[in-house]
Image 1 (spheres, rainbow, N blue to C red):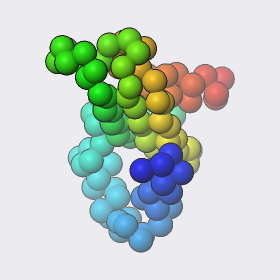
Image 2 (image 1 turned 60 degrees about the vertical axis):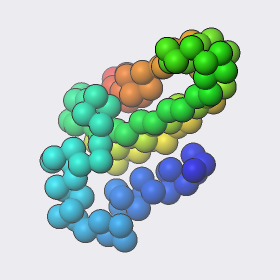
Image 3 (image 1 turned 90 degrees about the vertical axis):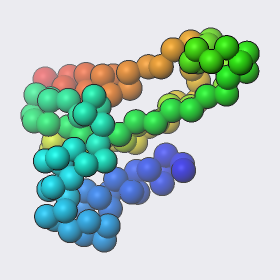
Amino acid sequence: MSVRSMARVMAYLTHTEILLSKDQRSLMDQKLLGWDPGDSPMTTAGRAYGKDGALFWDTNSNGSGPDQGEPGLQTLVMKFPNKVELAIAVNSIPGSWRSLSNIATNAYNNAWE
């Protein structure tokens, strides 16, 4: 799925009733259905909701997670208060997984100062 496709799904989830009704969307947020609790932090304007994903190719077959230089990808979609949505994909791994939701949350909070 491309970043554009991820953003399109977020727009449908957030702004239409094509995928979910208003009540279903509310239940999804209230119960964190489909959202990752660790990627759904409180912000200065209220709760954000996030879902991340990652994959990598274990080229050295050590099974310990990503190592520097191994091919891989991290993705994140987030729905912030004030009708702000985010879709991001990073196609490099610096030797460990980044906390994309922390980076995005800090950017969101700092944007309102």
